Each structure stands twice: as structure tokens, then as C-alpha cells.
Length: 213
Image (cartoon, rainbow, N blue to C red):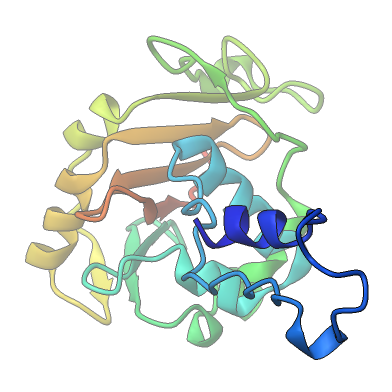
């Protein structure tokens, strides 16, 4: 309405005297300032994955922290020896990998180039016997996304060392995950869950490298 009135005031009126002083001329009302109507951030899994990929490569602590659910945090599964270790991470800046005590951003050197993982019904299978210097050992090479069905069946808790949290909390985070993204280069798996606000959050990192123990 205000914009329409403003436009109308700019039209010449034949009944007005040409000598009307400028002060007597109707002024176009200023458009009302309304709250921002910018679209909300993309809440798709692809957007969450791209946020993670960019944050790791840019060493952006804040962007990576925003990808975590404050109520869940991030759980990192590693295999430092014969037994696995699961670490609960509340703040990514404080986390150090078992491998050479490197920060989480060291993953930038190991991530494959993957802006859009290939959706598959089932993730490629792995076989140590098929692993060579040039092949990963998976039946397909690349970056894939699928339901977290296999991850739900993973039971490392009876023999894992849990750091920074409890096995019960770790199991709860594992149960929340509904999508898994696999990169076959190092066999890293990234498990995502949808939060109550509809956004996708990273809840589990599986940084185990098969056949290396």
C-alpha cells in the first residue's frame, strides 16, 4: 500500500498549480522497513555434507561446530590398536586424532573431492583381500551415501575405550544416525542425523582404516 501511494504521489496532477511551492507538494512516504524475509538455510543432507567438506578444507572451526548438535556433540571412532576407541567431542577445536595427535582439520589432506555423494541402496562392500596399492578394496570406488543400516548393526561398545562420554550416550547418538556417507579412499564414514529443527547434523565419524591394524 505504501509503495502504491508513493508511486501515485509521483504522478503529475493537472489541477495543481504549476507555481505550487515544493514544500506544498505531497511527499512520497518511505517504504516501511520489514523484518528480513531471506530464505532459511538449506536443510538438506547435501547442504550439510558440503558445509562439512568446506569447513574441513577451510579450517573453519565455527562452521564445523555449527554442524554439530549441541545436545549430541560429535563421536569419533578410531582404531589405535587392537581395540577401538570412541571419543566424544563437544568442541571440535579441542579434538586431537589418535593418529599423530593431529587436529580434525588434518582430514582435509585425506578427503576425496566429493561435492555430491552418489546415492545407493547399499554401500559398497569391502574385502581386505582385494586391497592393493591402487585400489581401496571396495567393490566400487568413490563417494557414496546410503541409509545408516550397517552402522546401526555395528557394536563396538563391549570392547571399545570410551573417552569424554559414556557408552550409553554413544549408543544413543549411533541410533540417531539415519544416513551414512562413505569415501572409499581411506574408508572414512560420516554419519548424519536430522535434528528436531529439521537440519542435518554430523553425529559420528568413523576414521578406522581397514586392514591397517
